[in-house]
Length: 337
Image 1 (cartoon, rainbow, N blue to C red):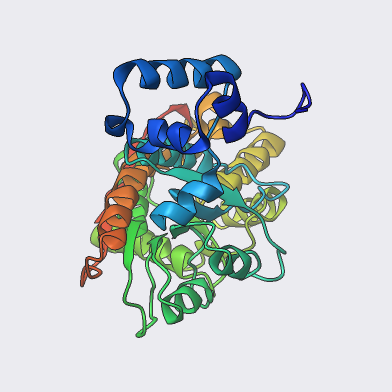
Image 2: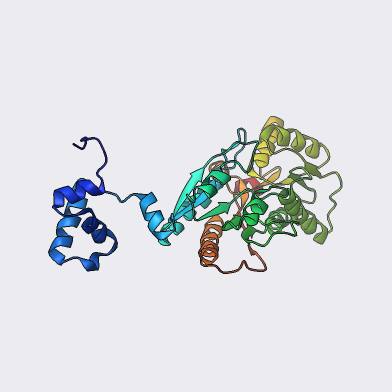
């Protein structure tokens, strides 16, 4: 006897409908083979007992799990950035339209490949989405060597072996927008707070700041800083740049911009009126604190990732060039005089 708490099975439906297990299977997969009255009876029982076909069994029949794997990294303590929320929401909604679902998995923070092998060996997913593609990470090459389908949010930078589909955002363009905006506000000494030199993403954004300053023929000597992405490091760097005459800041992240805001508060200065501040990523923190910030088109990124996934799973070759999308600048009080 089946327990009242056990989930209904194919046998449960067959017994209640007075048909064979094959008839139930036909009702789900080949309804045209059944007489209308039989099909109605079986579907009625399925709805009544809440039966859901086993995913693994469907996968064995179709060779597809209809799942897309994405390793989800926890948010770092002391940072203001949770931009992946916007990306994930759109990714989930868009993949549903193609009949897929997103399977989030975690892994050892010290091992960037942890979790991938198990899913690949068990054929639990059809493809992967990579979101952590800074220079030197092994995931893309590892998956490529195994002919595993995937699309990356983030360019392969200097990897000559990379032959996969990817989407990225033009970080240099975003920093140029932010710097040009502060220059238009009348600032001449616009400082840059960015990540360590090893971060290709940070260095790309830095080039946008330098390009805008060069175009305006403004000095950059001693105005740029490379540091870790946390509020306190940015706070101390902001104090140093203000002492050197900086009147505005472009930051590689909203986390760093929050550090600048704290430094201003400690000096009794007001963001916007006294010192201009622009962050990067337009996080929830930026939206509630009135921080101007560069906004990445993460919804567009997710839609493009799903489009490329669909083509990849259909066997299409990877495009010779990736897709680079333009960010925008959201202006709020922190940068307006």
